Image 1 (spheres, helix red, strand yellow):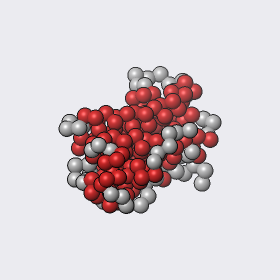
Image 2 (cartoon, helix red, strand yellow):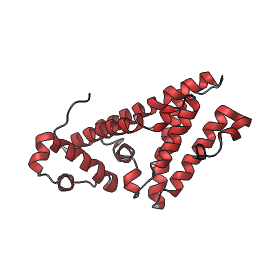
Image 3 (tube, helix red, strand yellow):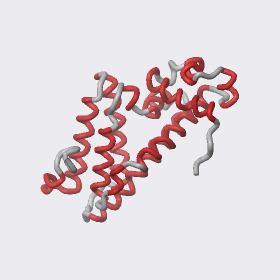
Image 4 (cartoon, helix red, strand yellow):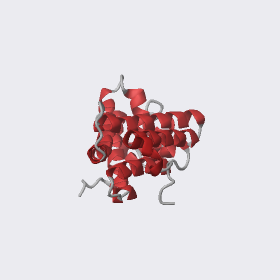
Length: 213
């Protein structure tokens, strides 16, 4: 069981996820967070000493929320670890719904601004991205063993590559004002992973999201 969060604190964290993904960390004001949460500045400063402290907590909150979401995702039901990895990629594509701020990443947004000026925020974002990469790294490692892969790359490096593609796809989605370019990038990531593990036999795994249809 996770630690219970006070309802007003959780409202502020949820509001931070919403507002910062739209405006970015630097442009977001505490007053906007409070307005989005329906709370006063007094309530804000009861829970957080500063906007920076809120941002760090918001990154951790985002990590907890997404961990629960992905833990319950259907791709875990596959017996084949490679199918689980590909199912994860397909699931990321399925999440490209709604307006751009709704599917893009809070920590990816913040770290682009804060990596040099706000090291505590940078480190919180790094933990979030690294922890998430570790969840897919386990299945990649099992797939490497199952498919007898011998290569000069590691499960960890491929797990981080998936995150690099995903975060880059979010930047492109922002630049293009829509998810189509992000979906195409994720499709290319899927093809790349299939080729790494299946090579000439890649066709048996089909194209992105064609399985189980």
